[in-house]
Image 1 (cartoon, rainbow, N blue to C red):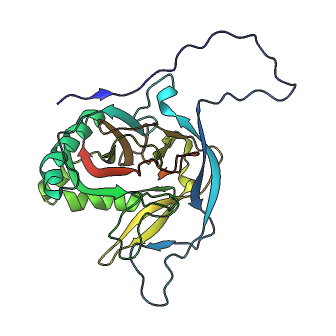
Image 2: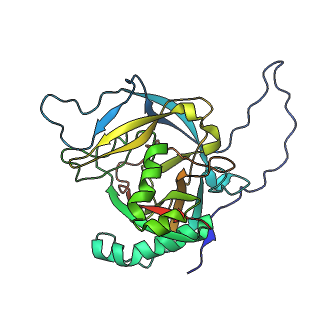
Image 3: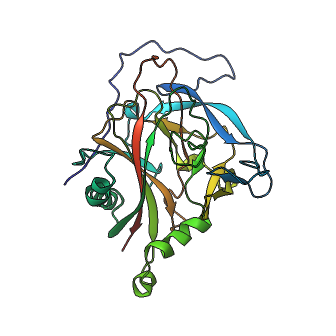
Length: 305
């Protein structure tokens, strides 16, 4: 299987007379896109937590607050240069899947895991790749995207509308030990990364796309380690504090043949994107009868030479 970076350059616009901006008010160019609200971390204690299932009686679902911030989301298909997974932290690839039914768990594990691992190696240049997790999400009718996309016992994943990164510095390093259990293989690893691969599984996404934040616009000070509590374990992610410098992008109308690959962790600390915060968001003016978004995401560990 071969993959092709997916990107459409904007058409050349006709020339227009030069317009001088007002004194001391330079014009700020803005690429095509939409305005949307994103759920950033607001007031929080030193270590926030969120439950992903019904918490014990008397225990709150979370001990932190969230604040909506309007942000401009660039149409990444209209940028002059294709985004890169090691520069911005994400890239869109034309990568058709042979999986016919994404409701079939056995088919996903038998065929899609192999496809995703091959794509991850191709995009990152890694030597080896292991898919260790996947999740099928179905948007819930009548519910805004804001939230972590789970309710009740956590068995109905939907759109996640809070800005987050799936791995922190600590949990990213811990994942390597969970995937590579052979001590000899583990000792040979010098650099590794974790990437997500996100795909629509029910036609073009027209209601709740996934937005990704340019890794270069995110400071380590924006990232807050947060405990995510499951029935039998706890994990750690980064929630994100708002900053006006954050640069958001999305790929309108993503379809089944396309895959958005984005970096969630990289053990190399300099010269490459390491964390790519992301969030679902509600498109404005969506028709009432628009099909609800359905998607699959896989998480993949890649090891470099």
